[in-house]
Image (cartoon, rainbow, N blue to C red; front, side, top):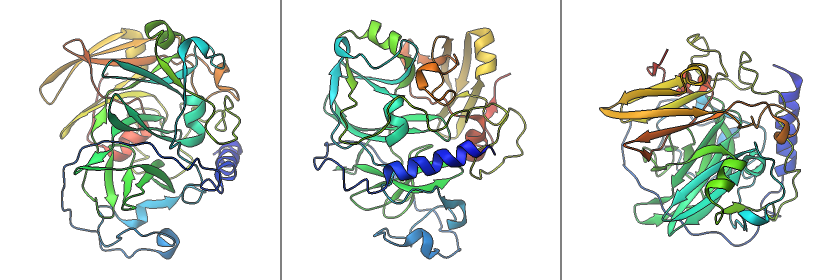
Length: 351
């Protein structure tokens, strides 16, 4: 793997070290949903390098410890944003027209979370129209996912463990220090093992599109309480379609698609489908059925890659997708293929 990726990981770790020391003291409220399961725990023992400094109940887990590895930064080394501030759309002057933002609409409110900020923090604990959410982005898998964060009547807030599984972000909740897989939103270690967060419909769009659609919307401010080079991409060149992930991931020999082909991934219960961007860009509209639900997947250009050029605003045009059911937006994600192959190897791939 290219040396720049290692340098990027070290740079992110260094930028986040001591994150709790420069963290804003206030934390936002929240909400999410659950569905408990009691999987039989694997038999491997917990290595001290993973468990040191944690209050997590390591006797409860659904995955082998061997699948979890350090990503470089320590616990909270990449600091979540707990007290987000927002700027009205009309006052934003730091985003280029094609820059990617995560758009979330709920209860009549619309908010944009620029990837140029999320790439340095990975988690924003926020509240939208009375619903507490965790807005998350894992640059290593290109997964932008938003979850409700109220579980069993309890509002959780999330931070970064500094761990990865199949190259994907492992989060933790500060209330029980359970570990949660960002891909899928399921707790894999600790008290909440088997609980799955409810995903909130969200998608990546160009800043220009969000601003035009929501002139009264709000945008996550660069005034985060942290000093970071927002706008820079510490993973320059990482999304080269044929390059493997820097960290290990299961099923890396799955050659149905190139490792970093972007896909539209939709999951409903045990059924899942992946629509490659290469297919979607040619057809523009793809209709799929997932668990009996008929969905329409649309593609449009004019959205820059956040993981290409040294400055995000200069990233190449990769486009973005939308998924609708009966004309209404539904939850989906746009990960790299290797992540889907690792977590959902039985996925159907549209050709």
